[in-house]
Each structure stands twice: as C-alpha cells, then as structure tokens.
Image (cartoon, rainbow over all chains, first blue to last red; front, side):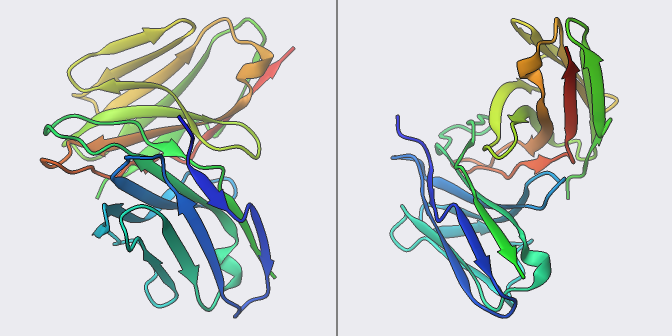
Length: 118
Length: 116
C-alpha cells in the first residue's frame, strides 16, 4: 500500500512569516495525527483528527498553529506567524479506525517536513 | 496526562553484543507499548509492540518485556549489527475509546551506536 505522503520535505522561512504543510494519509485511514519533533526529542502530538473532526488538540499552540482536515482525507497544518522555536520536523501519521475497544492499530508515519525558521 | 521516560539517551555497544533500552510510564491506563526505530533523516518505523495482556514478545533478534506493576517496559536487541544503529523511541497509549484512537506519548529517544 502507498505510504503517508507529505510536502514540502524542506522549508526555510524567516520568523514572523507563514508556512503550510500538507499531508495525505494512507487510503482508508480514518485517524490522522500531526506531530512536532524537535531535534534530539521524541515526536510530540500537536493534533489528532478522526475523519474530519478534532479528537485532541490540547498541545497545539492555537495562537499561531492551525490545522484542518475538511473532507476527512488530506490535512494541512499552518503556522502563522512562525517563531524560531518552531524549527523542527513536522510528522504526519495515520492509522486505521479501531472498531473494538481495546484494539490498537499501528501508526504509519510520513517522511516529515523539516522546517527551519531563521 | 501520560509521561514516558526513556533511558539511556545514548548507548554504544560492540557488534554482536546485546543492547537494552528501558522506559517507564506514568498512566496505569496505558495498555499498548510500541517501539519505533528512526534512522537519520528518516521517518519513525514500528519495529515491535506489546499489549498489556502479555509480559514478553519476541521477533527474531528483538524482544520487548513489560512489567505492568512497576510500569516499565524494555527493548532488547541481541546479536547487534551495524544496521541497528539508529534512534529508538518507546511510546505508550491508553486503551482507545470505542470507535476511537488514543494518542501515543513518546519517550525522548535513545541513540544506539553499534561499534564494528
């Protein structure tokens, strides 16, 4: 099966500029995740969608970050305005929707977008 | 919320020796514990996972053990090879809600270097 696609792969912007990332999950995967991975750290969840609804955005800096998944498939993550500390790899992941409580499906990660804010 | 601690942050072992990476978690409701391998500049990839209803799982040279009472789990790699060099992340997840998925909370990672 095709994997999770992300674009762009690399982006360099100046602080206070805006940037947007795109993710196309594996076909049929209802759950989509955006993670931020700062160099030397583990991925940190920013937002989780189930179909086109937000399940968890508790760690999303909502004053500058926004995300949408309007048709329940592709998703975009936007940063406006960017700060130096936003420099990181932004990973998108997707997983199947569990049908039974207690089941857990693997999350498949995309290649990530490496953002550098100067 | 869940907090996952991972040790050590770096680990160097001679080729052929074993490597062990340990993680602890805080949320007693967590019941799914995957391990991801991330090579430089690449995406994290699942290498093995364990659910709370078992204490150990093995897949060729890789094994994971879980102690629910102590809330810790470990990754064991035997007969290490140069291609095992990477950053390894542990993670934990609560039981998903009906028709839902819960988030993964990741550890801080262990950089494993295999010395030829």
